Amino acid sequence: MSSRSAVLCSRNSHKARELERLLPGWTIESLDRDDYPPETGATYYENARIKAAFGREHAGGWVLAEDSGLEVDALDGRPGVLSARYAPEGAPAIAKLLGELAGVDDRAAHYTSELVLLTPDGRELRGTGILEGRIAHDARGSEGFGYDPVFVPDGEEQTVAELGNEWKAENSHRARAARALLAALG
Ligand code: IMP
Image (cartoon, rainbow, N blue to C red):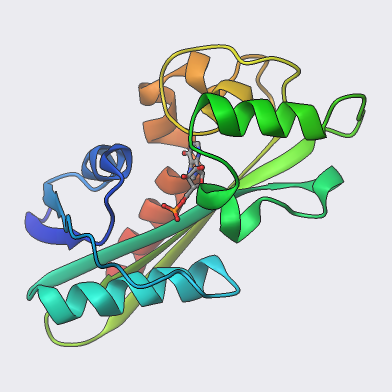
């Protein structure tokens, strides 16, 4: 198991905590700045690269960036890359989502996580992870963050917020992206 220190280009403290658990032996410090460039990419990968390039300007060593979101089939993939801007995170975003899905039977959705790692010698490595599931009819549970209280993974009856952080560390879209990244790193 390699030990490594990386800067994470995000102000989302949940992500730093989850990633530190997912990348054993790594120390991950968030790059806490208020001048991140706008996430104008059309894809999670493009947005992760925008954050990583910004991180490279401001930090040496290993630079890690992640972009993620929730895509809901009945909403034609919304909120998607705009997940963080759909509504203020937490209760307001969940209320808006449940409102949009009121009376909708097709609740299928998936989370995507795209990780980009810049190595000190200038290489870029990438890992993608997807978690399929459905949107519940009401919010349940207290762990995780964002849409976790209304996201029920395939094969489960509980929401991610009920399944908890240990479950996320094994099974989440971010866990899958981290495993793919470690495989790419060799
Ligand atoms: P980003 O920081 O621009 O990548 O925004 C990601 C957004 O997608 C978050 O603010 C959440 O709204 C949503 N999201 C991503 N991953 C998760 C997760 O693991 N649980 C709940 N919501 C998530």
